Image 1 (spheres, one colour):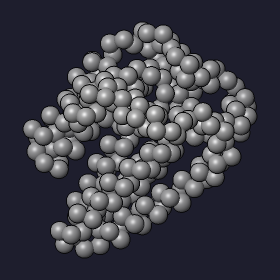
Image 2 (image 1 turned 30 degrees about the horizontal axis):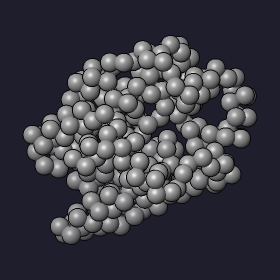
Image 3 (image 1 turned 90 degrees about the horizontal axis):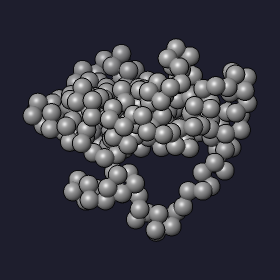
Length: 239
């Protein structure tokens, strides 16, 4: 499934960069001192992605392929992770179907071809959920630590992705209702650690809210959101 997604999303890799991708390319060319000053004024929420891209481009350069390949790989990881997750939660057939449906979504191709963090946000959300299922299956300390670390990395990559912990709470509640004692308490401890670890990012980002002042919050924007998220309103309603 991951390989299919990798091949499918590779189509169109040579299209021209758009404005946010130009920002990524620009940031990779800054000196570390210039980069530090940039984060002091804006884009602190993208700091982790920018650091990783700076390290990546230092090795692989800043061609269109080099800038976009991490996102292509990220979506392939997400698709493979969904297949594994579906198999763990239900069956191999369900996992394979879920992974292939995911790969076919218009939004997957779109964000796989953007030199931004969103493909890896999806991948880490999937990996975080997988880590949680492993921790619930065998609740040893190292598995809960893995879950907490992957979730924390997800939040530092894209702060609103912290919302993934809402369905995680439902998954833990379901496990607890099956009589698996102590699962809820372990998850609360892990979630508390994630919250504490992400607090510095929230504090620093709170001083840069002007960056998102352009985001509209009227009803028209709400109605447009499903199509923007899925790349098609039809796909949204089908799903």
